[in-house]
Amino acid sequence: MATLAPAIPTEPIHRLSIEQYRGMLAAGVLKSGDPVELLEGWLVEKRTKNPPHRIATRRTRVALESIVPDGWYVDSQEPILTADSEPEPDAAVIRGRTEDYAQENPSAGCVGLVVEVADESLLRDRETKARIYARAGIPVYWIVNLPERRLEVLQSPNAAGVTPGYTLCSQYSEADSVTLVLDGGEIGTVRVADLLP
Image 1 (tube, rainbow, N blue to C red):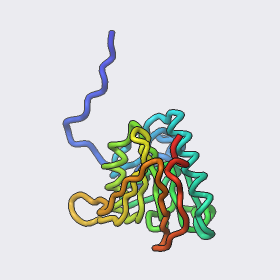
Image 2 (image 1 turned 60 degrees about the horizontal axis):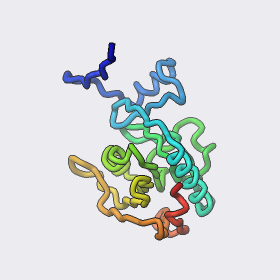
Image 3 (image 1 turned 180 degrees about the vertical axis):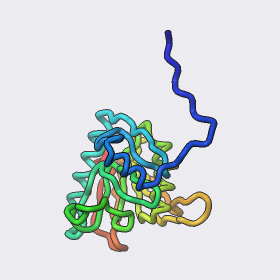
């Protein structure tokens, strides 16, 4: 007997607050490492990572760590806090030291750059994640686009209106280099080829 895929609810469903999501973690309903993240109040299943995704994530982290100045650090696949979400970007450049966030995950105001490595997740990363990061005011968002072997750089978040987003989007090929800007200053360049598997 074939099993049917679960139906998408047609009835209104309940969105979770950050506090409810954390309560589920504290009560053991969810466990650290469960393949879910809270996006705009919805509990969303994270995609399984294949070898190219894993390699690109590691390469991106190493490239960023080589240029990030004192006063910032690079995190990978760890939660950041926005008003209605706790996404876990593949990489993020965060102000301070990881020990500064012993009591609370870094808030969006402490994040200078988020990076998502996109394969099957490309649509989610371009739409849902871009909306979340723009609404939170994160100044720069990179999408390492594996299918098209390029880097998409989104800047100038616009949180106003019905659909928040970024007003500037640039595309860079494998042959290009990209300048990383933190607090309005250029801190170094990264070769796109160094991010790709």
